[in-house]
Image (cartoon, rainbow, N blue to C red):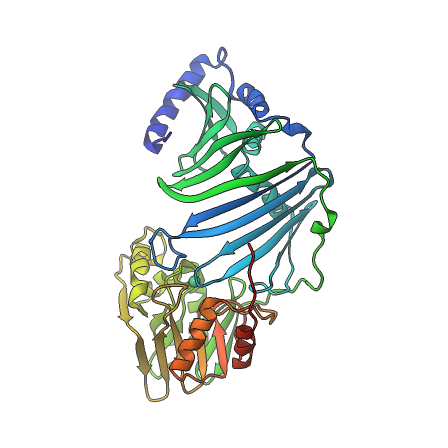
Length: 482
Ligand SMILES: [Zn+2]
């Protein structure tokens, strides 16, 4: 079942008219929901609940190859203990190149906790948050367990309208205080929610309904964005009213809260500047060449770049930013490129990075670049490109790897510094990750090309990785279980 957002708009006007005319005689949406919540079994008696899921997302701007339709797998387990206000979830996300990030999220009353179970991304840093984040752990089940979605609609204070029946379907339209109306579709016979169809071009489909011990659930949940499959999740291992092991709600030993540093600029070698703590734990370099400035990596967004450019101009007033280099196409590494295009910098990247970047530049964002109507200047290379003047030398090398097509690193032969994004990330607290394919691929490339370095700056995490650390990481092999 598919709702065309355009026809929705027309029909909502019609229904508003119908509502005004007939609301006194028709069953209300709330009356309908009161009975629909009972279609899923004795959920009101549930004190503890757990389930697992195995899912994949269609990787678009985070895959190995842009728009190749590749599936990125993830796994999830969740436990809720409603009687003591505790919830625990484990998320495992698998990314190209062999990266596996396993995080725990926990809510105890109104406090949120999160940590990296394997310590290969967040180290032993304990993140804490407040009620809003704690609530998110609970809210997420609304996208996976149909009963909770229906209960959430039942409890909302948003206005709800029961739409006239369409074939075997009953539909309810919701008008949130902000944002687009949402349409929920129920099977008229058994009152099971089958499609959640917001006008925002997202469609969440609950399907493969099964009943176990009187509890009815959907075994498959599929999300479509713009009619294209975005994620598919298989929900399994439901368990109700068991006695949860309380030790799963303990924070493991050795994890501590650390205060995140503020963004700062420092000169790590003559004319080579580091900006750290961008968006949490990201690092960007800029180089004061004789006549111009080169920026290494443009993460996140135009807003992020505006802030970075302001700091660069404060540090080195009056020099133009002539080049900005992107290590690879992934959206978190290229999201800031548009602002540099607005500043008339040349965007420097390996040839295989351009397919995504061209789409990014053609997007309809209302940032400075979008408003200016400017065209971006892109310079591409294969294998290698050098920027050189009297006092400076930067070499960009394309690195064969399994994380992203067109991945390249920046090397400063005089200063013996390597800058790389996602070939190796070391947690900020210095915990050493275990070795994955892409780290070995980087090491093979470094050895083959006889690149010597004293300091490696990772885009994420630690910005002073030593060759000795890399050696230790490569020896730290681990068999990963999902
Ligand atoms: Zn990446």
